[in-house]
Amino acid sequence: MNAPDLPTDPLDGLRPSADRRDPRAPSLLRPWGESDTLRGRRVLLGVPYDGGIPSRPGARFGPRALREALGAFGTFDGSREMADDAGLLDLGDLALPTMNAEAAHGRIETAAQRIFAAGARPIFVGGDHGVTGSLIRGLAAAHPELRLALITIDAHLDVREYEDEASLSSGTPFRRALETSVLEGERTAMIGVRRFANSRYYTEWAEARGVNLVTVADVAERGAATIARDAIAHVLKDADALYLSVDLDAADAAVAPGVSAPGIGGLSAREMIELVRTVAGEPRLLGADLMELSPPYDQDGRTAKLAARLLLELLAADGATGR
Image 1 (cartoon, one colour):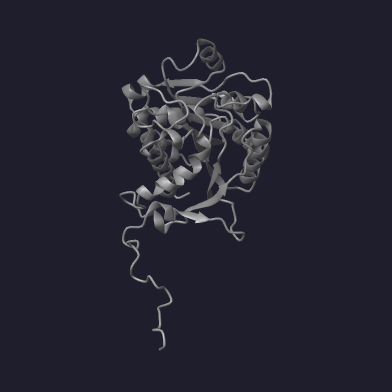
Image 2: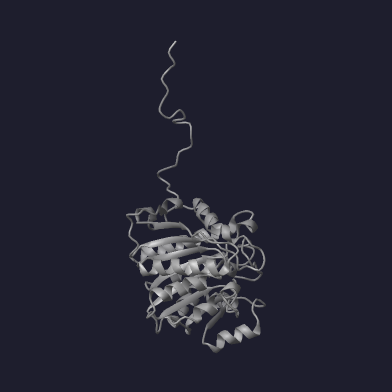
């Protein structure tokens, strides 16, 4: 007796299928292909390193969690269908040693240098915030004549002293950034600084170099969009380009428990979104990072969703300004 013919796909019609009328945000990530050019493209790079965190390791899993969290969002921003754009070219994750800070930071700096030299406009996702120092150093190596402006959204100043590359930590990135030739304190604004989160010594160190420190109370009093616009105007007065660095621990622990250093009294989710949305709309923004997402402490995924929403705000503003 002959067996009946089976369809090519034996489960055809039995699996759930995506609703083409409701595209999801992961579709905005376009896999890297060898024929792709980086010049002028917005690209995503994961930096899965958390060797600089003195406690609560886990941020090395942040890039994966952020990508997965995109599935909770659609591609329509309320006025524009982002799926119609070129999307975000996903370069994947760097391969980084977990126990060798000097080697890891050297590789991160090299990757950033190559990406910026190729003319791409990257969004880096991590990872402990210490890697931002190496990202900016890579940018400085690619464009040593650049006059860079920096805006950070962070509860902490992250300007701690360090002895050598092996002692780099999540508290050192902006000390290292300010040591480069492309950045000065007068072109730096730190938004979301929280009470009882920084020492007098490091606060005075930053102030002495002209860094503009903006507290959580300032944001609550004047509004996130106003604060962001003022910060942009301040740091770009004598600058060619802008870099944005976001530490998710700037958000209150109620909305972002899954970070390396959660704190009480931080920014609200809406304030974080409005800050990022406003800065992302600046045409001279040439790169950004989202750091300190730590999935092991993010039991219900709310921090990953916040990070994914901030990533989408960066993309939506990018398209809206025609860049």
